[in-house]
Length: 252
Image (cartoon, rainbow, N blue to C red; front, side, top):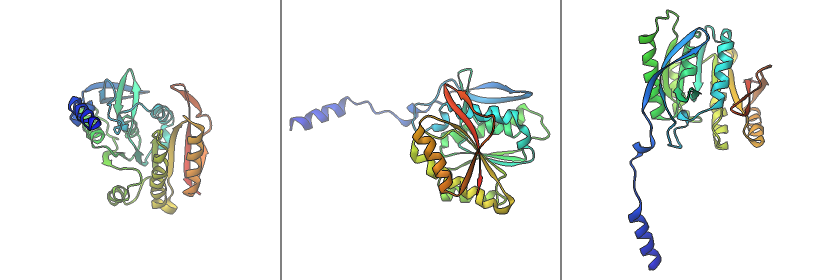
């Protein structure tokens, strides 16, 4: 009886917070330059505390991917692209959503940014809307954002209905710390690759190593899904004190 009374007292002392407390949506306009490309985006001063908003966390792999793409724009020319998890780049203490896809849109035919979280999608769409108002590029690609949770058959089916030809390139930066995210990621990648069939497609993954067990799991999961992993020569580098590399992944 005494224990129950203590638990009731503890409940009375607890402060219940609205879910909005955990979402930082104080976005400010900032300008970013990648070579000759200038991009205007809404950015956060700090990341959300909501553990599920992985699109608002700082991913070193996003830095690695942006550097690789900005130095190899020829691989983007004329391509249709889907980005799996349109994460962020940490630059001058700003959290930026959609910068990789918007950078790619300067060179490719069309690009679809995806994320599983509605809050992240909201800002992605705002940043997409901003681009024509700030730029006068005649070669601007078709740029859009859609919901896609890795491994979710319904989400992916809707996307492939809207993009029946599939995509030439699949982009991914980093992998969420939970090992449980790896199988659904490769399930999604395999389906996208097989959708193109003989036409061919490839997955470019900017991978940052955090644990040897994770490294092995990523490679094993790729093989399990009938995929071939090739390390792109000369791409190994250190980002935020972690070793990163660019992998090019195709069907066997």
